[in-house]
Amino acid sequence: MMKNTPYPQGVDTPITSSAIFMVATLSSGEEAAQAVRSWCADIAGLVRAVGKRVPDGNLSCVCGFSFNAWGILFGSTRPASLHTFREFGVEGRKAIATPGDILLHLRADRMDLCFELATQLLAPLGDAVQVVDEVHGFRNFDMRSMVGFVDGTENPVGNKAVEATIVGDEDPTFAGGSYVIVQKYLHDMNAWNRLTVEQQELVIGRKKLSDIELDDSVKPSNSHSALTVIEKDGKEVKILRDNMPFGRPGSNEFGTYFIGYARSPEPLEQMLENMFVGRPVGHYDRLLDFSKAVSGTLFFVPSSDFLEALGD
Ligand code: HEM
Image (cartoon, rainbow, N blue to C red; front, side):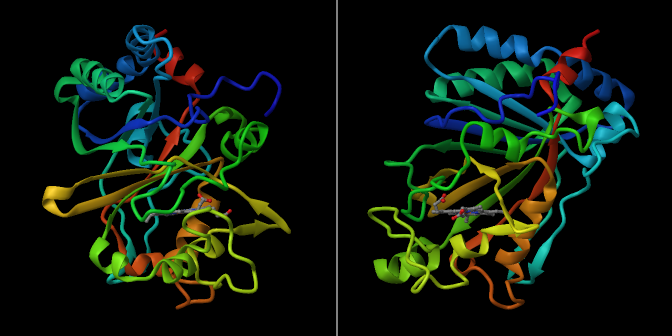
């Protein structure tokens, strides 16, 4: 990061056991926009008030804005790489774009903290926004995704996480910010569970029990972990993920809420292209034979200094 970089929101917070993901659209009119702008400055105070009651609960909140919302709320000077979500893939296997102007990513080690914060954050907004999607995610056994494999292993940590996610000199006006893509996936668990463990391991590219990466000699080039490893100028480019399983067994709903942060949308989009279109074209991610993306939106997460300044 640059010297004096504005303080980021809690993008790189420790992994927690609960999360709420909320996507909302902004109502039309200046009154709604004004309500959201003044609310932005109050977010940090609400997180402090709710979080203080459980000191070791690790409560955090990240708030992001879509391309459309940015123009309405904050004017035409936008973060350099902010645009609407780009779709990838073909009918039947598509990363679709869905509506969403504001993202709230609430994390804590107890669902009651996330729930209370969501309640307190929404109350002052009234009908200035409409929540179009809300997912309550839980941490599953030893960090296992809904498909039973440990998720998050190759995430960058420490300085490397900051370097991968926080905007710096490349866009000085919006330094301290971050880009984030969310996608809600539903899995066909019956079909997935019909595969043997060995077949599943070839889909993911890692061992199921031990989480150890398959040797390059056996790891298929269309496995999930092969297609999501990307390079730029000979150097691997990482993103930061904090996916959460969610679902309702009684309704046969088994899902993964994908959330990926990066300092530019580019690596996220490259990964989506590799997964949905294929690398090379047609050589797509086998995980998508068992998983369908039912939402997709790109947001910019401004620095927390940017949000607090809106109260001045
Ligand atoms: C159906 C939803 C998804 C599931 C269940 C899933 C699950 C997993 C699992 C189990 C791993 C291996 C362990 C790890 O390193 O974390 C993994 C790795 C990874 N996934 Fe996903 N993932 C999903 C969607 C995505 C999407 C949409 C992206 C990017 C746009 C992505 C990017 C990555 C990356 C970058 C890695 C690490 C690759 C490496 O460095 O080896 N994943 N994912």
